[in-house]
Length: 197
Image (cartoon, rainbow, N blue to C red):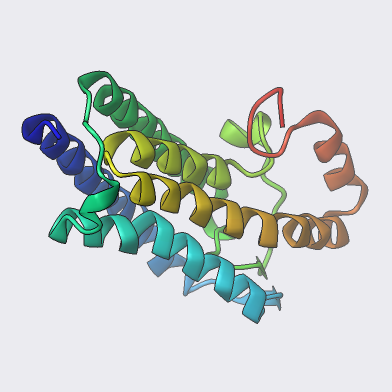
């Protein structure tokens, strides 16, 4: 592997994860001050969140720190690192915009907060779940930034497990709370990829 290109990819990934934490932290603190009126957390959801954290943070973090598993390395290319960095930048942009639009409605798990509102502006005008869009972009970015088959696929797998375990439950909960308004919103938006899915 070309060490300088590979190292650049690893540095870009680390900077992206730091940006992720800086974006998330103030919203996490604020969310604790808003009363939860409906809580649908379950063991399945906790498993999905843990899998996403494992694939998008723990596995690549371990790889960046140790180089393990070396047997799955492949040669890093400048074009891949640039593409990965662009994906990660786009992920952080969507992630930030999503948090800003949600404001006091934000929660890490399936919860409805006091005076919860249906958010349909910003990235929510195009997709119903832009937070998942940002995680998908992170997974794709990780696959290009870190030149290792196991680590690259771990991010996409972590995202997929969380998404498929949770998105249907999330939409059912929103239908229960917002009824026809959410159904109409579903009819005019896609789930995570604008105009496609």
